[in-house]
Image (cartoon, rainbow, N blue to C red; front, side, top):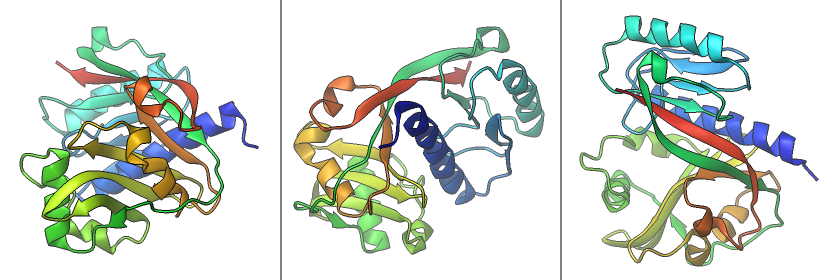
Amino acid sequence: MTDVCQLLQIAVEDNVAWCSRICSAHGSNETRWSEAWANFAISPPFYPNIITRQKGVQKEVDDLVRKIREANKSTKWGIKDSFADLTLADQGFERLLVGRWYGGTFSKGTPAGWKAVASPGELRSWEKAWGSCDDTIFPSTLLEDYRITFWIKGEPSRIEAGFISYDTGFSLGLSNWFSRRNSSFAQMGVLQAARSVSQGQPIVCWSTDDLTLEHTGLIELGTLQVWISQ
């Protein structure tokens, strides 16, 4: 059984790996230290330029903020404060949201009506259903990465729900779930589909809505914050 502290670190590292993968698809300039991950290029919408990997790294993040501001001129960019212990208002950041990490290890499940996106056209439909305005966050080259699955319920022409899973090799990360019917994470059966491909690895995610993760078996691991430059 993986304990809460281990699961929390797994969830953080999973998110670093996922954000790195999406940023790299857009042409990133990344560096990873034990304290934090950083992208010195412009990150795509909804993806940060800094993610902390440890607690108590205020000084290191302050230094990274200065370097990123020198490297690119983005007017809006974000920091994922993985342990909710940074103070960034003096650096010109506003706290955008507070969320929580979740994780757990499960036995094998069944897809229960879910299937994988199989073509660039389906991916465009998935991204529109998710809510992207310009369909440019998830390029079709991601379909060539066997670690990534874009899941859908319904037909590509009428997608009812969706989410993404990413197999890091040490965990299965879940993100970007949505439902046209406003169904919760549990009601959609996201975890059942994820369990069908998790191969016994921990399943991790984060959310700003605790209610959607009730009765799923996932346990709360810790608090995170997202900061955005003003």
